[in-house]
Amino acid sequence: MMLRNLALTAVAATLTFTTTFGATARNPTTCNEKSFIVFGDSASDTGNKKAIFNSQELSFYWKGRYSNGPVWNEYTAYLLGMPLVNYAIGGATSSNSALVNGTENGQLIPSFLDQINHYLQNTTSASTGKSLVEHPERSIVTLEIGGNNFMQPMLTDPNYLFTNKDRLIEGLVKDIMAGLQTTYNAGYRRFVICDAFPLYYAPVFNGNPQLVSFFKQIGADTNVKLVKAVKDFRIKYKADSIFLFNSANLFELIHDPRVISAINVTDTTSACFSGANSGENAGICSNGEQYLYYDPAHGALRNHFIIGAAVARFIMNPHKGLTVNDLVEAAQKYRVGQATAEKNILAAAGIHNGPQYPSRN
Image 1 (cartoon, one colour):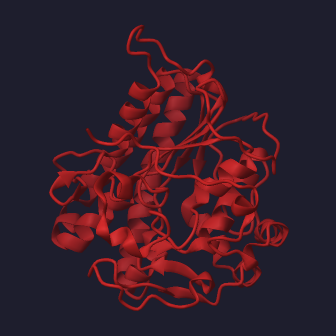
Image 2 (tube, rainbow, N blue to C red; image 1 turned 180 degrees about the horizontal axis):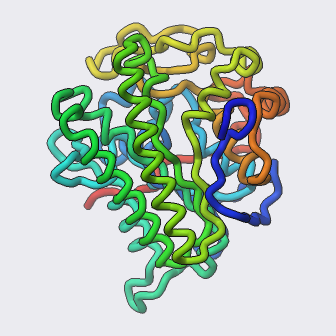
């Protein structure tokens, strides 16, 4: 995805989806329906962490999302006309390993690999051991993980991150490929793999030139290894429906003044809300729709909306790179600039997503 040219890097040669762009999504009532399946962290969580851990930090967010409205994958699933299956959990790392792990009140947060394993367990018959998903190859699996692998050590022990940067990158790529292998072995064939999230755009880092440069380098180094690993996987399995989502370039497009104007955002560098870590209702702005970021590390609702529309548009036409004009057109078509948490295309269609990760016994 190059600025004003490609918004997502296609790693696959061809990808054929049979959904209709703009169709109405259905509720996932059976395992036989094709679904938009998401594994990941807080960038994708639709309420799983709050449901599992009753996280107090999420009291100041919208219905358990790390935002002030629906998140990107809710829009993507709806626009593809597919039910959403979301196992993403805020705070998750790629795996709870010796390198890095996610915790909540002393408990391990289910990692990216845990999420995949739990999903496959829940869609497998306990009596026969066979999958309950009749046609897994019809679904689209999205693998979105990695931000916490670097964010957590940066906030708790920066020296550890600086010293172990290369090991952390190698571990992340290994885990992403392990998740791809596991789901591929289970019969899934269509994938959107998100590359290194551009943390340097977030308010928590964007004011520090040294950290911006550092995280840009982490992203570049991660993506070199991930692109090669995915390419090798494609060749090995003759898999032609695997796409790599280039987050950094998409965010460059979103930060273009024409897109910012189209989504009616006025603040692109600071956060609407800064009190999550303190546990206090500290300074929540009154005009959150006008911010690109809701808190210092997470996008606000119109940011998520345009990302979701962009991903859906790309999936429907993977050989045409996204441009600024595409994002402006999508913003106008779906009235992103007028969207609020309760007034948007999801609310109008009666789509209400919630936590789906299995509760702890």
